[in-house]
Image (cartoon, rainbow, N blue to C red):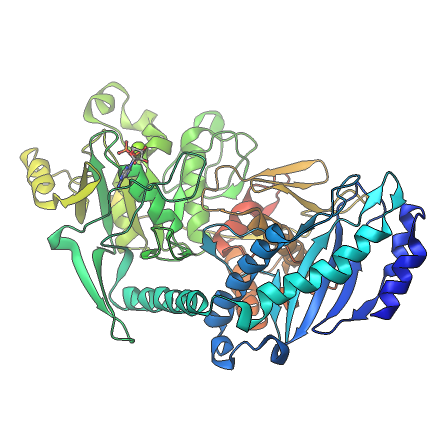
Length: 567
Ligand code: ADP
Ligand code: MG
């Protein structure tokens, strides 16, 4: 400790590069501080460092850290506590560039597995960035000393010591997380793909906010779809259960259809207390599918939906740098199946109409042999029965799905009703439609294998960089993820960039299929944690573990992607 004080004193007024001499580790009363990367000037990305605390000193009860679920919930809680303590801390006046900025990675409404706080058997490691203070290009040693010797120890005291924490709130977060996980298990055992608890508040405060709408009308399940779960702690939860198969959400415009579907697409994650969607839970493999014209596609067999397109293009191995609405949506479905999705979520608002339906008038005008598209409505049953993949679909403008739906939920002034019987009666009035052979069979699903040459490194600029939540770059190539709607945080996008590098490093052997590599990689992450899998010596604290579905989605959006189909 004396060591750091002396070093800082010696740096007073020197050129900014002098900070490099701080490199190393320093013993404090409650922790060891280690500098990972020291910035070269005040405008460069801030200095990264980590603090290692013996768990004993934190006083965190052992039972709170006994399982992986609990550790995820506790780490999330502590990360938010550190963020709060930073906001309340008495940071010296901002100087040049990033001077005096103290940061921990930001958490949104979801509880995710992240790298900002890591537990080992005996320690807690917290990873921060600090903008080392400057006046112009000169070191401001006084401010640096204040941050490193006073403020950081205070932040640790306030946010990582059990006796300073809101213990009831911490306990509640751990219990909520465990309850969410237990509910997910029970849902699976009962064959439910989604659950919305009574009392849940689904709408968000505004189009650009993820916070609950305070005046939101709480959700109440229709009696016919209500299920009650009995949980191990003696608690009971009742709400709407959505079973496997085909579920339709219908209703008038502005009655809350898309809001319900959005809550379901976020239901793959666990939310924090007070979010309103704590007990809105969806099959964790569920994938939102939408049209995405302009995206690139590499060697995807889209023949289940599209055949014989003009120019003799081969749709059994469809590749393009500029997909149309329907071909992009078809590719999105097939790729979702490849990355393990067992439930698909679709909203007419973001779908290509000709991919979804084809009515009799249009069939008369454009004969079947001139229409390359077999619409989703003709395949959705084969998808459920043959492939074992359920669909939840919002539609307000077309009754075409009535007869194939296992259940029809009507939203009326934000409240769901069960109109399955009525919808089936209406469909029956028109008599049964018979499916052709091409429709009762979903069609072939081909395995794809990435070529070794993907993400070729030629210059030093050829590396992965997460530019924002929705954009990754590799050299001159951009991976645009703005249509990957279940990507909720930039930390996940950074996690994706790190894992793409691992895929390239460990799995692109021209033998392993995309499905196999995702399986194997996530088994490893599950057992060893993201940190270990990355082999990260820089202690990156700004990553979250993405789902395999989003990692696959990112890979598929690389415009230089080269794939081989396994025959
Ligand atoms: P639809 O898809 O049926 O046209 P939306 O889901 O887009 O309708 O919802 C329309 C509006 O109603 C949105 O502004 C949304 O935030 C709001 N809304 C949805 N559900 C609720 C609710 N339960 N309580 C209050 N407002 C809601
Ligand atoms: Mg809508």
